[in-house]
Figure (cartoon, rainbow, N blue to C red):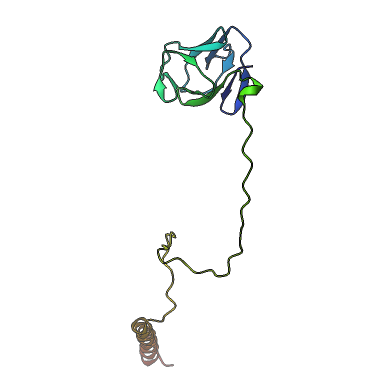
Length: 165
C-alpha cells in the first residue's frame, strides 16, 4: 500500500484523491504556517500517484525541484512549504533485497594513546601552561609588597594625627 511519511508520521494512501494542507478538513492535515490551507493533492492514476500543487504560497518541491504536477516514484522526497515528506509506493516483496552479510572485523585493543602530530585542540579555551612565568610571579610579589606598604603608610598617618586626651 502506498504511503506518505510526513514529519515521521505515515499516512496510508487509500483514497482516490488525497488532499494535503493546513486546513483541518484535508485528508492529510499539516499544522505548519509554511503550508497553505489547500496546498496540494495526490490523485491515484493506475498504480501511481500524481502530485499536483494547488497554487500554494510556498510551493511544492519533489527531490529538490519545484513541481506543479508530477508522478511520484517510491523514495521521492516531497517538501510542502518547509515540511519534508517521503513517498513510499507499492513494492512487491520480490523487489526487496536482503542486506549483505556483515564482514568480520578483527578489532585490536590500542596499546598506546599518543596524540597524532596534526592534532589541534578544538576547545574555545586556552590550555593552561604548566610552566611558571618568573616575570609574572615577580610582578605579583611587587604588587603585594606595594599594597602592604600602602596599608602600613595609611595606618602610620592615622596613628600620628590621632587626637590625644
